[in-house]
Length: 358
Image 1 (spheres, rainbow, N blue to C red):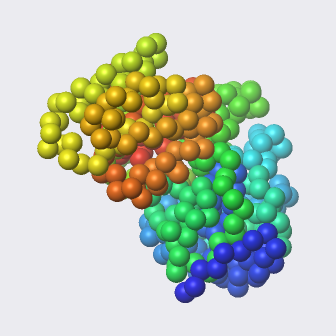
Image 2 (cartoon, one colour; image 1 turned 90 degrees about the horizontal axis):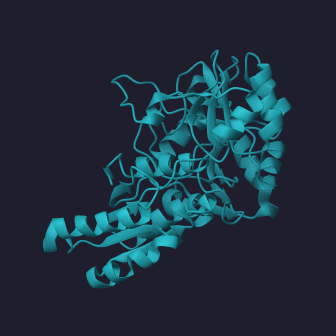
Image 3 (cartoon, rainbow, N blue to C red; image 1 turned 135 degrees about the vertical axis):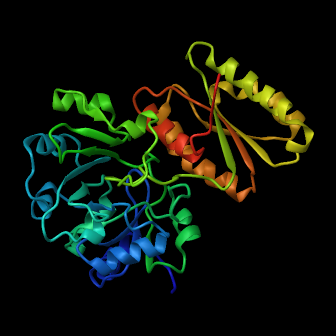
């Protein structure tokens, strides 16, 4: 199959492919999504096959306006409606009880459905022209870093899907916040750019936090209610280790010294690997001599005082490491306040939860 690159002028053609049961990757403000007809069982199966994604990992259905949600769910609780009015279009996914028209193939076999209205004009027009909810997980091979540019999608999925709608690089760079509204108490299942503080302000109460986000190990037979909960995600080909400070004060110096100690402990044979250090703009000077002495690649993720710059660059940087054949990534850890919660969630998953406390 030839994978075509579509521009904004080709939205009608991309919509036609979706209506015919084909797959088209699309841009959002978070990452690129892999789109198919969310009400078509076969389209859902194609999405799982193209990504190599386990079929019990739910898909997100994208709509162009709030009114399109009602046929897809049993009901819309008042708090869910309030969140939609406050944050849509935007990086917030809500989980509600699904209606009968949503196939189990799109929900990972669950009686709930994940719904989002993305903040991207090109994709909103695509959904409108297709006239259907667009099921869309991230447009990458399952488990690898999510795509933030059309070229990332092409690298992973060329020959597997019909087309890619190119709208340049995304803004936020990590997937949407997911909030489960299908139970009595709103529960955060995945952190994103809509923070706990944002949700609390609108809801008038702090949502519950799913225990898996706080480090609790999943039991055998665990059934994920949202994407990214169960399986290793966002991971580069390289082994990745996070160095996290117990206390924020003086953390930059402590982390840099511990990374240097770690390299010395592992010895010369270890240093024959291609290694990268992932750090912040503010602390890059701490690694300059070490990187030159040990022939280590130094990657700048962004600024600590601008965490959105870090989310924007994270997946692009991990993919860059893959392209350069990096075998080991040693990375600083960062504050989990605000959007830092989403940043560290992705970094911990990319590292397979391999964390060294400092």
